[in-house]
Image (tube, rainbow, N blue to C red; front, side, top):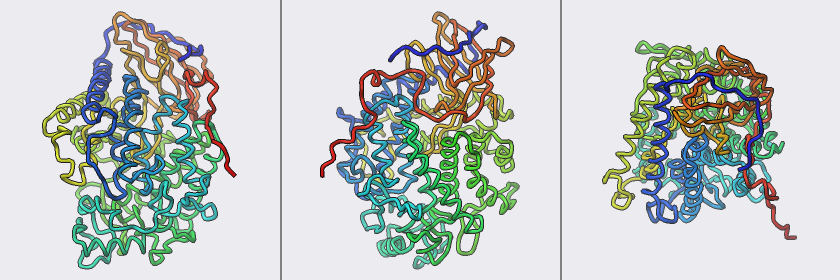
Length: 629
């Protein structure tokens, strides 16, 4: 890496013992470094492929192995061991090859699946760019993947530019996947037993029951017939998660075509929602009309208002797409109005039950049903983008005491998934002041649990039965120890990304001056304590008693925010007028900073304050190859 630029600088003036949260934070960083490398070694072969089955049929599952290792690079960009980023890249390549052999991945991208799962698989791929935006194969893959959806690859028919639709719920490098076969859903049958029937008229099945006998061949055949008739073709809201891929491509080179596609696709869904009286329809035909294959009904589509998850797979893609559009337009908050309108629509239909306010989660032919406590994460992400008080109220009006619970139980089933977004929101809003210590202790306990679990003989990769059940495809994400929620919340000042394909929308990120790399320097801990529309307050602590440290603070994960000026609380104010501030920390030094910021003042970019070595050589951003004619 080359030397850093010179930025406006503040130097810590306070010297003293490190607070508890700082000590816990550094301990968590260290234990994740060590355990993640051990975990990777235990569950991979010498060529970095995963120790697992010899075959895996159907079109499900290629996302899951990527998820088991994706947090390695995210940990690196926050200050973790650089070997984790290297290891993640090696394993990513090996997984891509391995699942190509299984048949799911074609030309490095899932041949056919939905964007709930594409989004999960791509999270770690997005984070490669935050670690180093000048890796040629990452850039090439990004353009190749984006070309599957914006029409740049004419051989793959996923996109209809006339109707502004992605042409099928199941899509990928093989194009729109209209016909679902017996093999396609084979591995999923066991898992899907746990969900309600996908249609209301399946023979002998109560449409409101909570389980469906997919194991019954007659029922399975009927479900496949109905999927191909009613769900196989046309667009669905979960496809809006593809805007994350286009936004990722844009932040490499600011190519306007990716921004244009994102904004036009989101605008098309806004129009469909207006046409449907303010409720977003969950199925659009190849003719661009609502309910073409569903008897004209706006509900009942794949990953729609009814099956299998309900509002989760409606609100999350709307949130992801809205946040992407705000980022690409340098702060046009009107792009959040679509998800806001659906949050408000559901709120208007609330009921009070068992002393709690509940909102409908599903829409059946009989109307709205399955009332639940509001899922806080969607309005929290909206607020985290806008910093508008009205959006904070959207969270707080549906607040439930369970939002303040901090537990390790959720990590047991999927340790990379966000569990405590609501509690972090409560901390930033001022009514959970002990959150930093509590979440750090929680994450340390959870990592310790994961270490004991993956070291156990029960989870020995050479002796465990990988064929025992379809759920074994989730083993790596269940076992992995890189639990990063506390570090993202506290050091970066933001929620974990929306799990099914959101970007990292945070207040700040850091770069180590001496190491000329992303992340906090050795021994340094950070705590973002306050975020408003134009202020970020944070404290930096050097826990080393002997060595000084130097770091650069960047406003926003993608440099999208601008620091107007910065001051040490009670000290001097330094004009900044850019998106980077340098901070010098003497041994045992602490500084509490107040940053006056202008949000979304800059074009989002993966470029940071240091220039990677690759750019010192004349390597083009893409290599297009010869045109043979």
